Length: 146
Length: 250
Ligand code: HEM
Ligand code: FES
Image 1 (cartoon, rainbow over the protein chains, first blue to last red):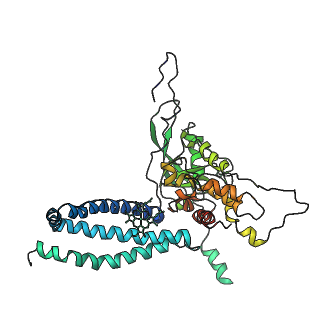
Image 2: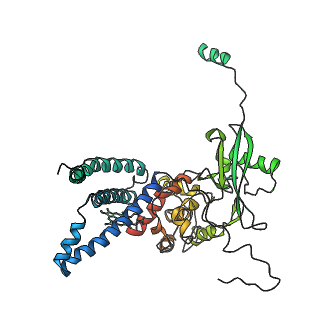
Image 3: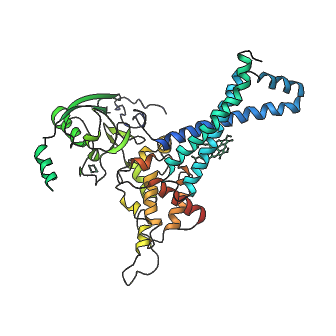
């Protein structure tokens, strides 16, 4: 959009320059934040799958370079990212079931908050031992028992 | 019985005390500047005051240029929806006894700000009109009263309570980023007629809400349900409209 600068015209104080957004962060509750987390974990998972399709497709190009690429994953940093990925997918999947319940179960909307705490509890119960065992090998490598 | 008497004697009722409140308000006046400013006022508030009383005190005693809407002052007309400490509320329904010593007040989000706390409600009403919020019937005029059972009425009772304050629609993250989304309030008002046994326009309204800017944009964040000053179960109403669309059953 170009600004019209005919002599004598009044600078438009209305129109698109009006502050439509801005201000402080909206203080939504569990429902809003679980949706934010759902979208972030969904997008993260998408990017992982994108990279994963590429690295797996490489085996069709050259099995040697596939092995080289996969070998670069064997370090504690990528191990941490794997734990993050499992956590993200698990949250997304569990909360996805909650959203399905909200949409299809007549009591879903009323119990959405309780359902969120249930899935968060399930997430923690799976992730705490899960992360421990997933990181066990890296821990031994980093601190030298292996 | 005597216990009651003793208590009332030993604890004489105290006069309620007022306390100073810092009220920070987002100001904008395009006739003066395109800049948004935050102005803080200090006012005394009684626990029985509502946020609206504070705004009126500020306007009356400190700064007559402060601009906001209000009409009934009793939570009926829906004029004074605004964002108070981060959430959409009717200023006339928020009691100061429930509030901290600092208030931050902004206009509702997602509609163009006209001045201070006043937004242009037109896009909101446009969505409301688009769902045909009136009784639609076909055929001959009925010759006697249209009876409705209690169960039939209960089907849409909750969504008759809407006062069109826009607190729900402007609490919705989908609406903030895409102003063409119909928004919760329009869906609530469509629900009120779709599930009314006397109405015959359900198909038309469902078709309208099946649009890409319709019910399917809802991400079930529950911000609307928590913002509604009438306690309407909005997310549930939206869910019922989604299901009516999926299963063609009203
Ligand atoms: C593990 C099984 C999965 C389940 C049960 C699931 C479930 C869901 C559901 C129900 C939604 C809709 C959320 C809403 O309406 O607010 C959704 C959104 C989404 N999902 Fe998944 N999903 C799964 C896997 C994935 C995967 C593998 C990806 C990545 C490729 C993914 C990416 C996304 C994205 C980006 C969204 C959009 C989020 C939004 O619009 O807020 N999901 N998922
Ligand atoms: S002034 Fe009427 S609803 Fe608050």
